[in-house]
Length: 339
Image 1: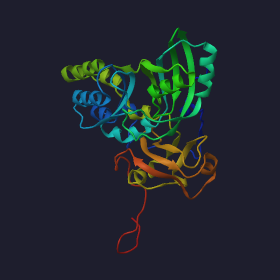
Image 2: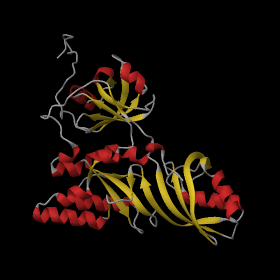
Image 3: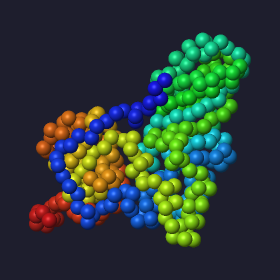
Image 4: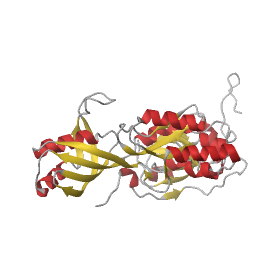
């Protein structure tokens, strides 16, 4: 089975104009000073069973002495697995993580035995768009809504124990999915164990860390000044946004976007293929820095051909104004002149 989420769509970066960047302004994401690196970082955290997601984030803030941090999608206390955490100023981009697709490994317990053929038929029925009403213990309003199951693969079946891999839209309740599948089978079922194995661009791999890894790295830095372990466990926030299609802009356009301006066609240097109007995109500098989250106003081909007009509407600024020099003009209040 092809385990692909919507964010896995293949894209190609197309060049609109040949443009260079000034090394005097901005920084490559992995070259930020350590304090700035932490304050603009993301960690691929492996949440243990027991604490709530909120408690885990509180511990992260305490370890790193940060005033704010945000996670990319709540996990119930007993559920383990990936809980990406955006740190400091990077918290502004956590919404992009929360809306990304998720993957889980789930152990479902049937209340009586069924034939595998019957189970596979139900699996087909629950793949694709499904109707789901959140369970009683949930943080959202209990009303029926549509959620997409991108893939549902039975990995193993042993009596009434069913091990399955589920790729789904953010906001899908796996506990409710198990209950509804059991109802469709006529046997009843419940979720016995659950682990999140993917959250948007983050997978179970060598970037996954524990709270102990984070604490150890911070202690090493505080006691010796060695940054290497902190830089290993904390990644640039841009790595938490790679699932979004990109628009690369000129240095001269960056500061205007940082002040909330919409992106005009002359500011575009490169753009990913497959972008359509209304898509959420990541506006980036030539150096690869996240500048803002925006909604596309044109498709890729139109942007490549456009000489004028607005191509994206800025929704969330991610870079501090003044990082790049002002390259835009504004009318003065009294004289109607430009500066």
